[in-house]
Image 1 (spheres, rainbow, N blue to C red):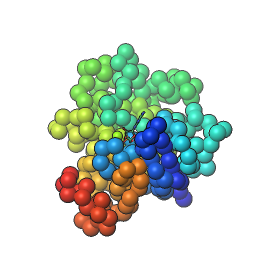
Image 2: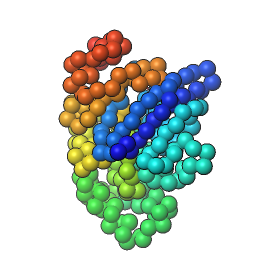
Image 3: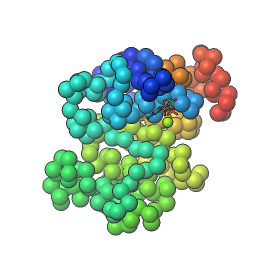
Image 4: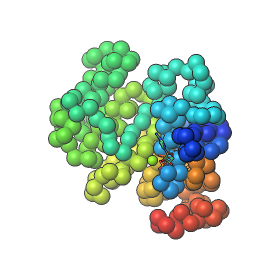
Length: 242
Ligand code: ADP
Ligand code: MG
């Protein structure tokens, strides 16, 4: 079953064609890594899936929900599709635990005690049980990102989007975040990850997508894309980053 369907996605910012007929389908439980040069449309594609961007034309579905439909329920989509950003975007004025409980309490009107118990469970999952009452500025980058992941998971999404989740981190903190993502992948979460972390790709990704100039140029298993790319553009890009 397709969990995410992206069909002929186009997004123009004035003259700039950020997406040009991008097509991609992702099955439930699949982990898809998206690579490509800066400006190739990776973030725009991700942001269109939870409607942080509105497509100029084309369609996106998450299961039966028509994300790009005129009558789509954006609130429901944002509940179903969690997102983790490069710069964490934690609420600086809220303690770690309150960062995690805020959205479920507000949006889902969940029971306070249940929400808090769930948040503690998630903190345990990301290895930060002892940071429940810390303020975001007391945390390292890797810890902030793990809180951001826990916060997104608190909404019980069916899809998680990660936009360069480790690129703002010091090298020694990259692994602790990738390990959390790897365990999520193993738990069966459907994930779209923009990242150039090849180790993670080989360990966790079912497929790798190469984007260039707003298009999905090539899709394949990590070993096929990295060791045996078919398209010249993919080859050139990989020579550049490997
Ligand atoms: P990537 O994430 O692959 O680096 P983006 O999706 O961020 O690429 O951007 C694709 C193209 O769209 C780039 O040329 C970028 O400058 C442009 N772009 C992205 N967001 C905006 C925006 N809000 N306004 C104008 N141009 C944008
Ligand atoms: Mg980007």
